[in-house]
Image (cartoon, rainbow, N blue to C red; front, side):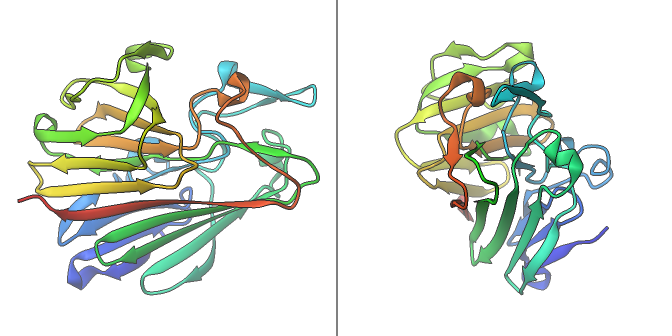
Length: 278
């Protein structure tokens, strides 16, 4: 399995990236503590279930009936998009950063998403800060929709001792097969209970996660374009905190969709800052 390491293993802070498996970051270790981890045995079967930080493009979540329509023609769209299991190329790699890319020159992509695009993802490690930067290029001759997302899995030994603060005003519940039932956003989230929530209508771009059992605090800073954050506790030993540009089925809802003109490109950033929780 090809891996690219940024940072220094001997210094105890580094990240591993696997270009051949969705271009995803599979592991982030900070001061010897695993913050984001991955079951590498599961990667060939499903990057979404393995852990790490899968890339969700062009649409995060699911479209109604797994289809959508553009200019009178219907297209299918797999759950969480097209690239999550695809091999990425390496544009450039250095000691503390790496940039990967993928295009839709494959016929299999065009069957689902009829646009010429280029997606570039850069991972950078700057001290206690891990940066996730995305550039999306519309290389086609018509307007191109997307609502990109990340799928971060954070290691949590004891969920009942973890605290999460997300500045959102609305919540959709997808737990146990629910279909996006609107619920009130609680003042305090009990991460020991099963939940699969999409939170949106944000009031701030900063998320705070305090993991008492594992001794670390995580601050996630989002660019303005990120409109939703998903929280899922349905995995043993892990909690997902997922920044998305849009909400599920945004293409049909007609909101929270980013439209790019021909030749246009967009850049989106997420910053994960780690510190000790004393």
